[in-house]
Image (cartoon, rainbow over all chains, first blue to last red; front, side, top):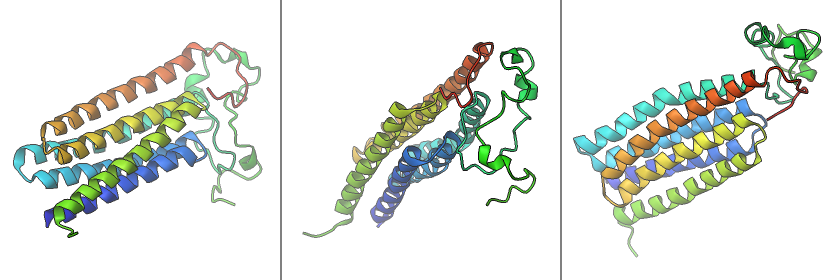
Length: 144
Length: 107
């Protein structure tokens, strides 16, 4: 009977991983793609590893599989946060339907100081691809 | 043909392999298309995580618990590689700070 449970978990996990891959391919910008690969991908791989732990059902291998899940759950947010920070700071353009960018202006306090001379007016450097949201006040942020 | 639990497990394993290959193919397409460096880092990270899942699947199929160790080590290496790539992407921007750069200049 435990084989059926393992098979179900494998299928669900692999399906989630495939959906995450699809999201990685089709979603519009880096930060949104990271949603797919980090959350759905980690959940899918975690399900597959849990199925492995269940399949072995003895302390040694199962514990190692569970430890891998814990490790993934700890490291995936850290890695995603680092990539997201690198993406934001290097000025990768956001999706043009993005509604709010709360970090706007907050990051160039840190990074704009030494070499901001390349562009004349301050603030232009961090003027991100949010042309559509410029029209409405930033405080609302509630979407169209 | 009777569907014993073992044949069900075999079918599920093969289907899972196919789905994971699809996921890796998507990640490779993103890796090739970019357009920016963080995009490629995300794609590489996802490829490595899916490889962990591959190792776990093979540990079930081959009934060989040593492949779980492969999964552990791959997860560790994937995390370190991602952190290193992210720092590299950030540091490269710092090195290029003096250069003028157009708006929305995705790299």
